[in-house]
Amino acid sequence: MAVKGFQLVKTLIIAYVITAVLLLLTAFGLYRLHLSDWQVMAAVVIIYALSCFAGGYILAKAQKSRRMLWGMGFGILYFTVLTAAAFILTKGAAVSTVKALIVCLLAGGAGAFATPE
Image 1 (tube, rainbow, N blue to C red):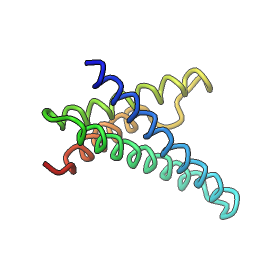
Image 2: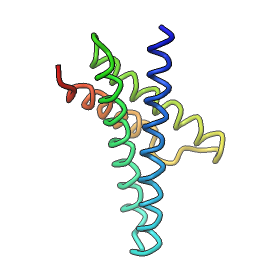
Image 3: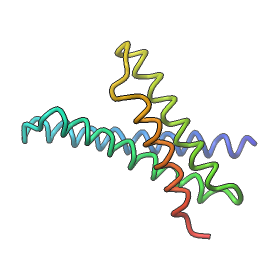
Image 4: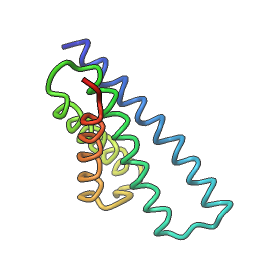
């Protein structure tokens, strides 16, 4: 169990590093290209999806069974940590919480589904 917990934390850190890098690129795009609000919000949702997909893929690849559940569970955990941090730091969510939950859940499951046998 300790090995699986360590793998989960390691994968979560990797996913948040991916998120941070992509958000920095989005901020640069906002600064240089003068993106509109809807473009930035769409980019944020896409970044969540890419991070959860990568995390679900990495975590499911490390597991031997129930890969889809591990991927979807990762998506839920990613969403939970992200939402908790948003509420603590800004007293509100950055995007629609239901939409973000669905995106994270499905992207984590899709990443797990994409793992080879």
